[in-house]
Image (tube, rainbow, N blue to C red; front, side, top):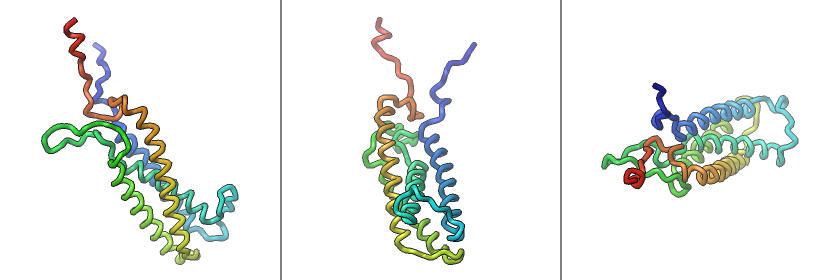
Length: 179
């Protein structure tokens, strides 16, 4: 007998976001390290990004802010059980639940940017503190893009909790039993 689709067999949205966000974060971090530590003479001349070097920093750290936010995001109703034994409420909307991920993204991204600026002189590059400011602005831009995309996706998922909540169970309609 063919087995039907069981809702518990699916990969929850939380897991998908964490995997994609983590993979993107690793790629972006490696790219930032590579381009930040390469000799200035061999650095590619990217003319389509405005504001020269600071624009490069903003673009790179926007990618880091986006991917790191996605990797650290905790979606409500993603499987954690409350102390009273009930499953968490599974409403997907952007309110205060994104706050810890925003703070973590800004903190980690800024510390990473600071560390890169500190070691650049060891590789023949100059240390510029305005680069750190551009890094922070890029992190904010990446967060803004992620929040806008999640808001758009949240409008889709809020009416479809079975797509993101691993605790969601198909409830039978009692009116169908009476007929």
